[in-house]
Image 1 (tube, rainbow, N blue to C red):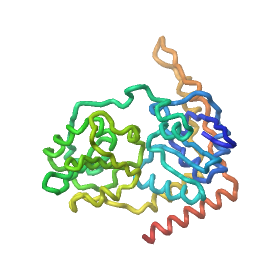
Image 2: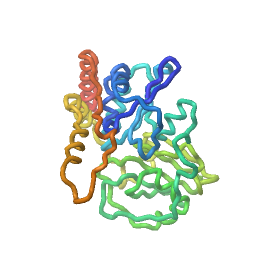
Image 3: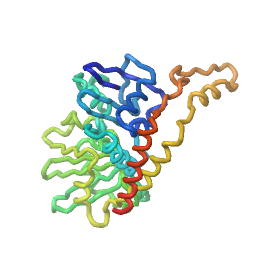
Image 4: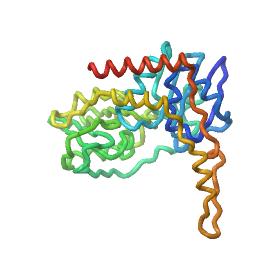
Length: 318
């Protein structure tokens, strides 16, 4: 999505969700050219069908974006590069997904969401006693003031769908293994203070609709992608294993020389193959349109590579 001179336009690419970051890295001019090279659309996608997006507001010099990162380090690396290749811009990860983008345009957060879209559940908890690379970390301050923590296979915000009753199930569950890698997020419950603290390096749709069902009279401290508050609360035997992001930065650099996979031709080839008798393949026409990737100028590419080299050197010196 591009905003310029008081107007905004939407552009769509069926295969671009997993490469939003790649298209943004060379800076605002290159990213804008990339978006405009793809198909302009009039419709909105919701949080289910839109797996990655960006809003480039040239009028206010704001960049909002979201996409799935393969790891905590990949997210941190992308944030570090964008902070330098978009100088003078307010660069923010859109934790509320499409809600953040429509809110920025003055259209509210619920434009693409049906009433009751945040589904709630009966509290349930399963402690994985073998997985040391959980999706998120859940910590609880106990009545004696100490803090315990567990690894969880759920996203941070998903724990809120169970309501406060989840806390009673967590505190009586067995310990999980110490972490061997950074999770995608974490949530900390303090029943005495009636507060919930949450962070994530992926979307956490619903965090701006507080209080969510069941959490009335509780306060939410949403910390974006900042893990440091929870890190300061975790017991010594369950600390976050911070890793240098040099490898993730190098991977971003490697991707500059790698063209996107021609998924459209793969789909077309698969659809042409014989199928079970009496069946006819049906293909979404958008899936046959390849993504028009970012095409930075030599100067933009040189500046981006210099930025990556500098960030890698800083990460290795850390």
